Length: 204
Image: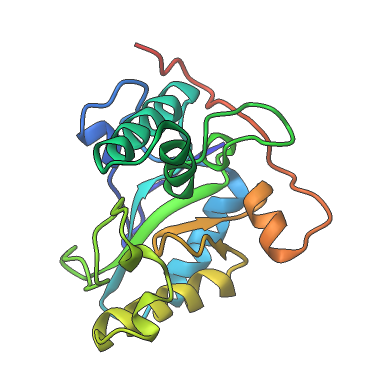
């Protein structure tokens, strides 16, 4: 895996580490192929814009914690146990190391990110990272009135897909390359990124 080297156009802010969640790491780690494509995206950014990367590789422990928290959130909204798990899986993939169902972030092939101006101020995307509402769907503002958010999401989509990434349609911020989610959406014959861990001791 490759650590982001923070060139001028890329800001890496480990969201879950900032939240103090168990199993998170202080830096954003991704596969080398993902990193190279992020550099391509950075090189294609309009003048005065930067990428802000919130998340890349996740530990199994963090994935389990995020999924459990999401299930609890859905139960608090009145969903049954079964429905809570089903709705939670829309926003947090159930933790798995198995080759046929490995969670996307556990491969190092997934990134959560957005766009910012030269000063690091986030562009209007019409919703926040990790929102669990319908407005998180990438194409939501194609039919709802927020021209700025619609244009910014489309810009991010064009930049990322142009570099080989695939967007997860339920989350405007989530993009994949080389993992199972990417393979399923692009029609690739197979995913070449499976479960991995970074080359350092990250556990508490």
